Image (tube, rainbow, N blue to C red):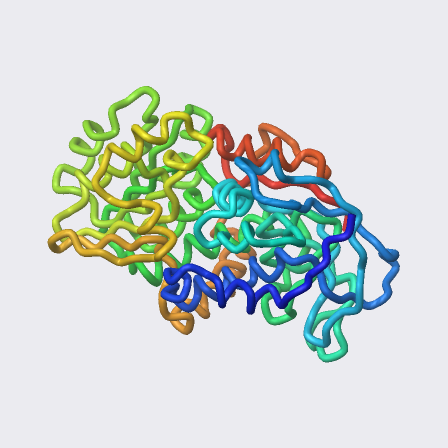
Length: 399
């Protein structure tokens, strides 16, 4: 099966998208367009040693969940546009929420419901350059690069300007591209955390959460992290998290009342539901809440209705419209990517430099190993289960 494109996907998406997409902040929209564009299988590729086809996970239509729609297809390689790079994928990062809503054709992925040619799957990864377009400068075959876009494939195509050059195509590099960048941008640019503040990070041992813990510590903050197991607590302790609350064994509200009786200054919040309500209850009168997700309210959770009813925020609207709302003097940043692209321009190099210097660790889950396109659905369900410590990745191929 070869997925063909009959209409320019960005034009079709932009002309039919919901109004909230047009209100997305510049940086979020830039990353989103990169993901959507890469969701259409590479339109062009120069002849390479890769052969004439490659294997990729594609969806012929939307469905209830990722596993229902994901199929392995043989996809044709075609000629590269002048500003494009063909990347041989080594590791793909797993973003369970993104893939769930992409597969369901909801929110920012609503245009997938109208697709008559199918769509590719995956949001991020790392690999090596296999070929470059005629106008591409600064990259050569064999370079290790991180990319945003359809990572659940043996090869992917990306605009050269969106790639990060990295030392090696490792799983840790895959974790840095979206999860590390997200934490840096939200904490340092949107949240502007500073020395002396108390920061609460929910899902602190998760893909983005463990980076948020470290950026808060780098800023000189006291950090409180929530998690769900002793294994995660040990990982957070190793990262320097000051106070760790295992919500399976302790009441988070009671613990916060003792640890931060005056409230917390900043919350990095990716859980939603009851955890979100607890965080709001312990946010200072003039505090900031940075929403990175709302996983307890995603469709995979059979208790999502009860979680959604636990607070008075419209978490899905808050996130997908990237709303900023005021609750008295409190500021709630929905999907807290900075709205000013220029303000976050330095985050990429900061993330890479901190990691290279050993000051920013990238945790990759080691409890389970996923290899090959056949394992991707399992990896997504594992990530959504909340069992992972750090970033979940899938080994797609060799460098």
